[in-house]
Length: 458
Image 1: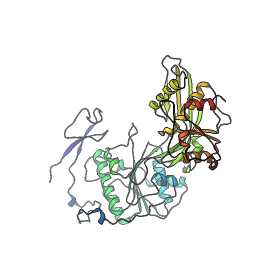
Image 2: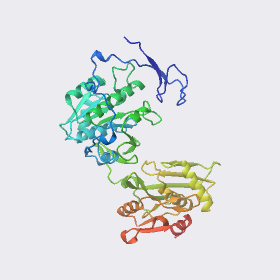
Image 3: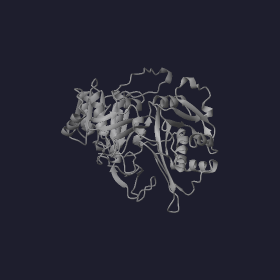
Image 4: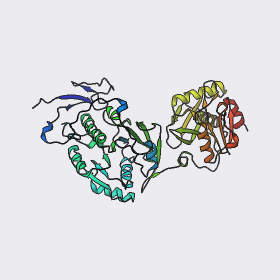
């Protein structure tokens, strides 16, 4: 029998060390190293692993000799998931879905499993019993004769059932609860997560079966387990949202088969997750009158144009040092825009508290909302409201100039579709645009003061 090998792993970042360390040299955390057994069992003991029946060794081939036939994706009934995945489920892909406890990960996956009525779906749960899953399925009010439930945590037993069942799609809930007999450490440890993921990845690639894995996250919001876990999988989806609010956002952080900037929006109801096909219904609040400090910006998230609401509050600092607070917007960029407004626009904001909020819980990185942010701050500072029928789509430079943004036609078309009457863009974006093609009134400007004079001082 081979000698048992052990090593020490940081439970925060997955750093491996041959000896125990008090402080992790990778992430800097203290007392996070745990000893784990590395020696695997003898494969001749009878345990089954995916691919053990394949004895043919791989050989290098010229790329011209490789035959490639594009296989159709599995299109689900969930249009939001299809968009996030890049057009549907890719056969043989390994997808990791992370999110906070109670955010709705299991509900989303069970809802997908029940709606794929034309495919045999195996839902493996290591956290809930069959009766608990049945209760959730009845609440979702979706019936399917091709959805099968397996409550098991041992990967060897799971693969034995897979051999007999031969599912079209496999769902694991969750990867931190699985346990492989080839690793002697406990479930959820660094070694177990790596080994179980490796077995599932080998199964997905050899059988061309899509595999979805639900993953836990740490208190910092990162996926629990080693960082290599995100490198191993094909797609990483993040399920975000406030548990006290009804809306959820499914965001792509890695995708080998599509864009990494897509997002899907859902509403959590008593009967499950409802797709929000028109995001503006949650990103733009309904109000009867105009208020100062509120503007609408046209942004792009992946291939999807969105109209979002920016809310600002500017008031005199009462505690000496002015506060700068932003929710959903980069704080450093906010400070930069405030400096531009003070230097180029002449607004005295140095002694003012500035609070900025992106409605709907979105985190925005598109620079095209710079003009909307500046207009919102000045509107609150001057206490002059901007009509709710006006929106903005332009970047602001350090010289106070209005810069052009990409794909302006999509932004204008989305604003027109939602009923806006006026949109402000850069003059350099107007080349090639014809007002005759749009019902919305297109306004152009080259500097910030032009916008403020024509909007705020009407």
